Amino acid sequence: MKRLHWPSRLPIDPYILLLLGTVGLAALFPARGSAADVASGASTAAVALLFFLYGARLSTREALDGLRHWRLHVTVLACTFLVFPLLGLAARGLVPVILTHPLYQGLLFLTLVPSTVQSSIAFTSMARGNVPAAICAGSFSSLVGIVATPLLAASLLGGNGGGFSADSLLKIVLQLLVPFLAGQLLRRWIGGFVSRNKRVLGLVDRGSILLVVYTAFSAGMVQGIWHQVSPARLGGLVAVEAVILAVMLLLTWYGGKALRFGREDRIALQFAGSKKSLAAGLPMASVLFGAQAALAVLPLMLFHQMQLIVCAVIAKRRAREAAAEVTAPQPVATTRTAVGTGTRSG
Image (cartoon, rainbow, N blue to C red; front, side, top):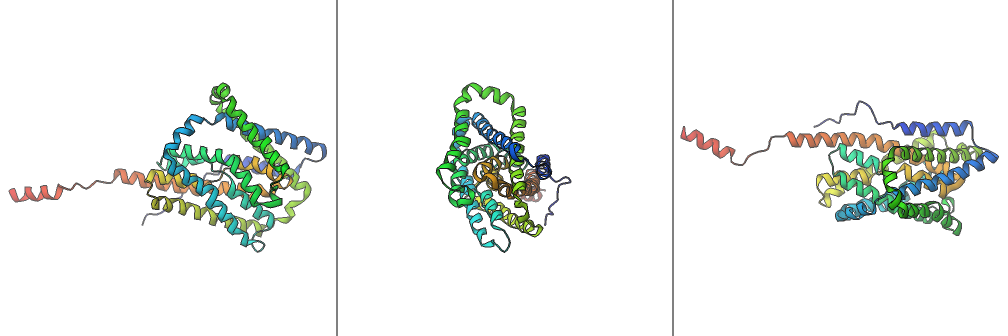
């Protein structure tokens, strides 16, 4: 049997360290009073900017071209917005024995978030899978998630998730949909600038998310919600998330085989269909949960790092398997007959 070799360096995302540092800053120096109002306003503007940039980056033509591989994309969407939420709803039975209700709300929200784009592409490429399919699948998931995630959260999370009220609907439209559509409409004029300055705008993205995290965790500290979370509860949350991730990794791999996808497509399905986007989930949580966003995003932050570590191990294993298939000697059907004939002639 082949041994599963662990990579010499586990992919501890540096950005996770920045997020943890931001949480620590909010714990030591939470925004209060007028400072909290300023931080909240800046966070709202940052979320709008994020979704404006999402709209400006997404190429409609590339998305339409990717529809040719529609079976794979539909399968990824089903995993992201159907199977994942069903697992989240099933975890309701763990309350209150393993999970508190606020942690469960965050866990359920995690299952509603769209898939990632960057890490799905990176791991698919590392594993020698179908990279163009991973790009399209991640893009479609992000696009659908802008509408599907808030609506699913409003219907499944109830009052604690913002509720499907006129006020929450207005927030979704103004902070998420309107900026995204504005970015799409202006892409014709600003698309080139956005493409040329991806690195700088990426820093704007990440800085905006850090601001959202600081605002959310500051509100949590002021309200004292962290007294609701014990180390045992956190351990239970990690265990539940590990089970959900394992189920999705197995389902996407063997389900892809049952659906008769090729090996490269199965790799893209596994990595795009088993992930959740931290970049998309954090700003959405700030809109949907408001002052309760701190506990809501904690399960997502933990799951994000877990999926990076596990998928890095899997991607390297898939790459070794592909390399072994390429270097393995291929049997030739006529070899035995030719040898036998030569021996008899001698």
